[in-house]
Image: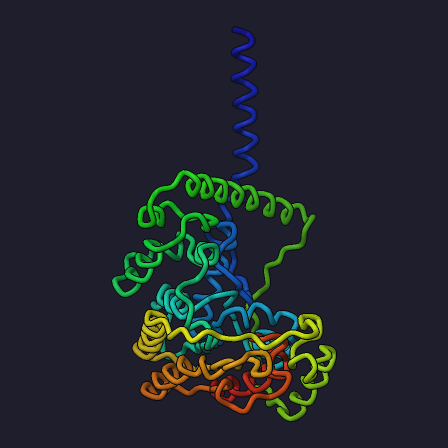
Length: 378
């Protein structure tokens, strides 16, 4: 009896200790202060991190910042001073929230903007960065889908008749062996799998532990808080000297040691003797262009101020670049039809040094993009 009472006492003390440790993180995770996030690569993370990201995007789309959405071109430019979320925020003091990472396609962009469609209005400023190659994707990899569509994003989209078919189609054709984790709501569509169930349980438990750990580290001031207040924009807009900025970007690019010998790629990613990559002749994937058209329609219906950039591809590193022109032609036709301003860098004469590899922009390419954005959102 004494052993039983001792065990119960220890169990009760353990439960009280766990409750004490978890009380504050749980209480503050659902409604954290509004945080300014210049770059959001995905919507995964702890409950608090997801809430902060959703709140930042929502606040931006209501007209409090330029919302810039693209793919890996966004995420790989963190060290580029002229990347839009660096240059406009740091040099021009114009609020920009950028979203994008590897393989984010037109479907991803449409679904994300649809999730926040109630925030879209005539004051919203949205820039779509289009990668011509993404129109040939059959879909994003499962791990990337999971990171972009946690329950807080996925569940509302399933209630929307315009977005549900995209999600259902994706999950019905997903390769379960390649998934990192799926929510239980997503598994209702994709089918139940013991491995996926265990992955989700493990993922959520790890997120909860991380939530508690980060909260206590911040409270004890062991790790400084990463929260950043929403900046106040200056009353008078800064007018850049674009010729000077372009010259500076060219100087910054010299450190990459790009040249004709490296196919105008960064020397660190170029292998001597490398031949240009050959693109296959696959056609544009219909549902990618359908999603892009739906995105433009959504933004037009909500009277959003929108501009589009078609990002360049390294012509020196890619053989038969005309094969990707079909996607550019179809996309720009939709933009012309809807009178949307756009910068078609892919169809412009290629500037040596625009890409540090085959696809991703350098400071030299970001400067004309920055100028286009600033001049469209005066």
